[in-house]
Length: 329
Image (cartoon, rainbow, N blue to C red; front, side, top):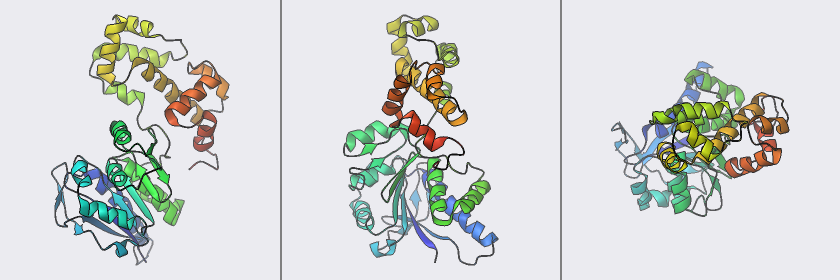
């Protein structure tokens, strides 16, 4: 029998949060058809409180069915989209009651992006590790202090509850679900059809310092950022960074925070962590030498930074993400 998948939407949902996961499962069905199977692997439904057309934040409508009786969710996968309309969705008692009821019946309850807010509002994330889009991490922690927020993960599994960081990470999550259901070969075939990575393992940084630098509209920091990233072993101080940017330390700090939404010291730390992650994943260098090469100085300093930022040690990170490691997700 096909595995049931319910993708839950609401007014103002983010389009890709729903259609990305839907396409993963639909492509898994295409693969089964191509292999001569007459029964699809998944039976998909887009569901909402009232049913009928639901308008996304992009202004595009999706047709939906009314939320099914909870008994229909037995053994199913439920995926909740995120989007700007999440605050109103959290006040939809029909939706929250349904989610609370089906959580004990479904095999898996998942969220994409701020869909985690909806799961948290139902108490489904209390005491669990969870993630959402990096722009909404602080808000999730503020609203729901009982959630153990994994700030940098792409997706997180905690029991039968899965949360993903948002937008395209919903695709990563669903590829992982397909792999669990039907094995690596099928998931790889789906990824190949979709022209995406087979799987970006959950637990890595959501975004890079390079992307953050590219998104900065203040040209005064372009030279500084490139120089810092190319000279990570140097002992950069706030005063030295300010001097490089041609500003006083106080003015530099104010403008840097306005441009990057983070402090210079945290940006430097994240650049070092990012470089260290790359070296850990791609080289056989010792952690001691990687710590020196990335400006942490000592392995202890690097370990402390990893635990603070990634909630894992460099040793554990290498065990999970080093290519060829049998324990790698």
